[in-house]
Length: 56
Image (cartoon, rainbow, N blue to C red; front, side, top):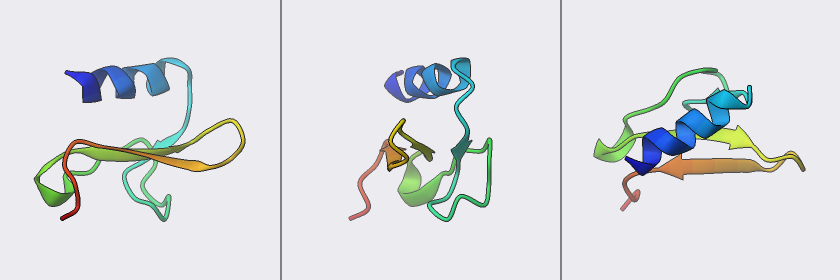
């Protein structure tokens, strides 16, 4: 499962991640739109979103 591998990569490096784009739910994933997702910041500070289902 690719989502699990992405999450394990982020967690394994101690990178903080959030369930929501407002970054109020640290260490959680979401189940929006019938899928799973999370957000984290890249080294330059840009927010990156990992999702398993499109919004539309």
